[in-house]
Length: 474
Image (cartoon, rainbow, N blue to C red):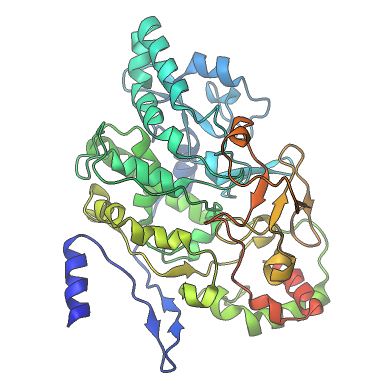
């Protein structure tokens, strides 16, 4: 009776939680996530809207952007003018008053240049949320003053973007380069929006006292298999509503959001069309076959089967079983106001609503294209697959070269340097923050832990080698 009363109260608050189940032995069990209906769309139209669309309608005036950021030397997307000279991470769009502005787009997080080629859908593990120069509220305020004095029309076009950046940019800093602060960004954006009208509010409408919790951006091509979005599987219902959340950066109201929503089914269709890149070097077929058998025995229950007739189980794994850093999933319980805002907002209404259902753990992801998705675990704390399968090899402190990155195709992951002993930076604050990016991953910081998922420890060295060879084939 008490549990039913609690659930009823949570429901009244717009909160829904996926319950952890226990078996006859008292141990917690994985929880299946049922599928939700998704909209269909046009793949070509989705690609065009993703790379040239105005889902963010405010940004830096075009000429100011070129002056500050320069022209790109590589037009990876083969876009026409004015986007031909802009990095794939940005899009030139017409603001509502007709001025051309440059806005960030989805590829800032969801695309990465790897060995000289741009892979759309690959999480950007070079992104830098430690950069105090780029993410600087004072810079946005200074730009605002310049435009107000010098060009009122350009200021009108840039105002929504500059207002948001003044408010949120100083609260997005991570402790190391390469991880993403998307969860914190979502918290901050909804905190300054009315849940029904989506209009901007100078004062927060919900509490935003939480911390920045890092995530590794997952590859988009996995989404077609998943029944729930995000690492803890709490994104349920219509996936398109979550995909368009970046629109909250500058959206004027729910009317504009509805216009963007009419295109997001096409974007989802494009994302569903993405396929993981093939491993580019020879694979030991005999060893891979051995690894495939071992994978079925030890890994497939959570991560699924691959090839013809393959299946993915869509299981939420309780924290008591997976044991990985718990700060990410716990943050959803510590911020029920965010869940409540979303589940009673415009995004949760209409004929294709979305909702959030937190869970005490994480979803076991599909592993398609896992060879190219290093670093690993939900917070990017493990540099190679070999270290995922052998927790004793995981470095406490490690760094990789962001300027001249090298990939280890044998151990599968980024070539890295262990940084043990004295002089290891703790947090990206003080002098460390002043130097811009920190490239040393410190796994002792809460949220950055590299523990858990120790299932591979019980395997022999040769068995782990065989499984890695098999994973290259996915």
